[in-house]
Image 1 (cartoon, rainbow, N blue to C red):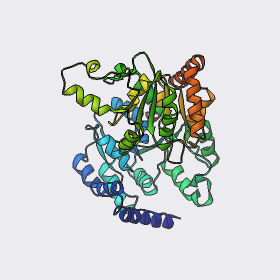
Image 2: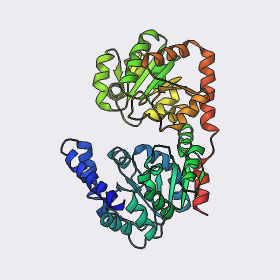
Image 3: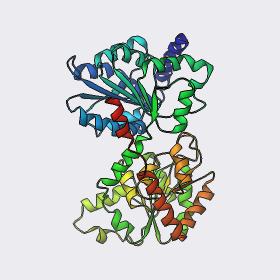
Image 4: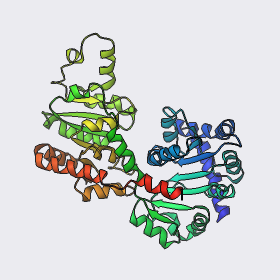
Length: 419
């Protein structure tokens, strides 16, 4: 099986090389990996003590961050390495994290990964959720690193529960010191295949979004735009969520709408389907170039829709929302973060394709959110919420309580790591 694994890694790298000819994102990831070893060798010496977090992409990085921050507090003199598999993780984080060492994780080839891990020689390593690599874990234990998995999520159709995955389970048992599970179900499944060194610590994303609520969430001009009206925020929207916006906007005369697309390439399309909407950047630019106040420049009483064409505002925008429609749930690309909205006591509406998001089921069970198979049904429910203040208030309270009654997962994890 190890031979087959090595062949699969060879084909994975080959596929990246081929696809990089047609896909710029894959090309950037491939080129970035060529620099990884040089980066760690230039920034980490043999005398350094290192904590290493691996996150497949941006979502996993956000999930691991509360634990990483607590480890930084405990070990202020350790160097911090964060590796990524996906450009969407690396490229977003490298823009704002200038303190830590950031790079791509090399492909999991024995010689390549051995040289990389020896250059890092971490004291503590943890990976987030389920991004496991055989040679990486094997080499980490050879270097006597403490190895952990945080916010782990096992589910029935993973390879570990199939015949061909049994050998990898043995490696996990041998090389991983402790697994911190998001859910009881994940913990139970792991126990059944012999991964007994673990406990249920909950989802570290709850810790992260609790922090988000307590920070300064001010966004320029949004209060003026919202006024005394209620606000619906479409977060990380795809085509399906934009259809919902089209359905409800003519019927919500007393509501304001903000649309933040998952990809800024959709901004011009949004301008076409919402011709009376204004781009957020236009408001900022016009204010910066004028001496008049924003209320003198814009009559926000007549403006219904703002399209967000800037990165990094969405989690703050949820603090202004009365209702949130979060994208990604009407197809198999993956539901975006619903907790960032729920933490502010905002009812969350989304599609029903979210099998890897157990928090979605829990939020629905607590009546702090709802999912729908069709855009029309979701639109009708949003309209119902706008007309039923009692239901809106109830769901708002439920959403906030759902988040803030969760255990402090990162504290549980830190305590065990330090044992």
